[in-house]
Every structure is written in C-alpha cells, then in structure tokens.
Amino acid sequence: MKVGMLHARRGIAGMWSPALDAAALLGAAEINQQGGILGEELEVVFGDCGFGSGELAEAAVDQLIEVEGVRAIIGSHTSDLRDTITRRVSGRLPYIYTSQYEGIAVGPSTAAIGTTDVELLGPALHWLKTTRNADRYFFVGNDYIWPRITLGTARQALRQQQSELVGTALVSTRTLDFSSLIRTIAASTAQVVVMALVGQCAVEFNRAFAAAGLDQKLLRFGLIVDETVICGIGADATTNLFTASSYFAGQQSHRNDSFLERYHDAFGTHAPPVSAGSIGAYEGLHVLAGLVRELGTFDSRRLARELNRSGSRRLPRHMLADQPTGVSPTVYLGEAEGVTLRVVGELAH
Image (tube, rainbow, N blue to C red; front, side, top):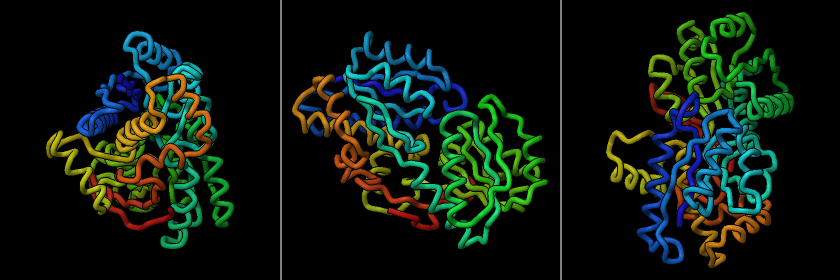
C-alpha cells in the first residue's frame, strides 16, 4: 500500500523536511513490523508541495496519485495549501492533515489531527499574564491565512484576559530583513512579542531581535517555534523565548521515552530533531493504518467517505492511544534553553 507524504522540501518551510522524512519512515517501519496493513506492506512516497504555491501543490498531488499510485496522502505543510489539496483529492482518496493549524473546518475527504491555535494561545497568554505580569503584546506574523486568523485568535484571548495588543505586523513570507520592524517593536510599549512566523522567517526575526538587544528587555512567545526552529535561531538568540505545543522532545513519559529510543536507534544520536511537526507525520500514518484496519479495506474512495463522516479530531485520533501525544493531547509551555526546549508547565488538556 503506497501512501504519499506531502510537505515542503525547499523554501522557508523546508527546514522541517529531514525530521518529517525520518519520522514517516519510522512510522512505516513500525507498521510493517506489525504485519503491515491488512497483511500488505506500507510504502511511503515523498512529494514536495513547496510553500505558498497552489500550482506546485496540485502538481505534487497529481504526481503522487497518477504516477506513484498512492492510496492516501498525509500532509504536513502550511495551511495555505490545505484547501487546494483537499479540492484535488476530494472523493478520490483520504487526506490526513497533521500540522498545527488555525482550527477552522477542513474540507471533504480530509481529517485534521494537529493542535489548534485556540488550544495553544489562550492558555499560553494567560500563563504569561499571571506568571510574568505581562499585559502589553505586539503580534508579528507572516501574511497568509494561518497568521491572519491567529491574529484574531490572539485579539480575542487578550481581550478576555484584559490585556492590550499594542501593535501588529503581517510581513511577506519573502521578508528576511526585519530591521525596520525591530525598531518599531523597540519603540512600542510591548512587554511580549507574539510570533506566527514560518521556518526561516522565524529564524531570521529572532536572530535580529536578539542582535538588537531586545531579548534582554522583552519576552517572546512563538507558535511553531519548535526544536528545529530553535536550532536554526542558535543558542545566543533564544533568551526569554517561550512556545506552546502538544509535544516537546524533552517531555518525560513512558510513551515518549520509548518513541525517542526507537527513533534514535533507527537514525542515530545526531538524527534530525523531533518536534510536534514530525510527530504529526508519524501519527498520521498510524491514524491511516488504524482506519484501514477498522474498515477492513484499502478502497481509497471508501476511506475518503469515512473521513467525510469523522466530524471531529478526536475520532481519527482514537487510533493513537499508545503514541507519544495520545488520543487527547495535553498542551505544554516550553522555554528555550540554548538550542533545547524545556517544559515549564502544563497548560491544558
């Protein structure tokens, strides 16, 4: 059974590709060690959907379906491509979207299993207010669907906790020079900068932020600032940097310890850093395998119809009881320490 793994292998989101590849290969190997899916071996085929290009995403989907003959697609990419891919696969085969996302409804034949910004932002901003006395915030995001909706989520959360949003900036995904924006933030009254920046944009912004000395004066809270992004930013630029996620590689649990042991046994001590994104790709394969076993069929159209009926994230996630984040993921707050993330609190379940 061929399954397409679809994510960016280039551009500002390409930095996650090595970890996504590794996690998917481990997931497929585990499923095959357990006898495959209905006795058939699972084979993963990788596709490159790029970043921000609907045409490239469509071409990648067509290649996976029409040339490679995949029976399902696991998508670990940015939100701006999700609807394009859904339209391409609708009614033809199941599409499991694994990335952290803004939480809006997804289209037909699609199941989203990742953590939403609503689950992350409200509890994290409340933590910053109650433990760090932070009441004034500046929002920085890339200018596409995810950060735009996340800005609205942040506004609502700050309003509920009676905090103030003192400034906002949505910047092009092509922007890698943040000097002007850094000056604007420095001149504001913000105590915390909330970031919804993707990959290399997050790296460059945080480096510039620290180079200007703002890391010693302001707190930063970043969405999808994970273990891969932290390594890109570098140890000298992560002071007072926080994030929230349903998964951190450093969290202690029997399930995660077991996963990390298998991961490093497969790929070595210096394997690409595991983060929520790569865990999502790994979990997506296990969700698919569980769905096929439950229905007792490989029929792609029937599997697609089943995802149409799922209605909520919890239904597809019930296959993940033994996996690192489980059926109902807990939200944790992480603080950067050099190029690692230390869990400093449990925010919600």
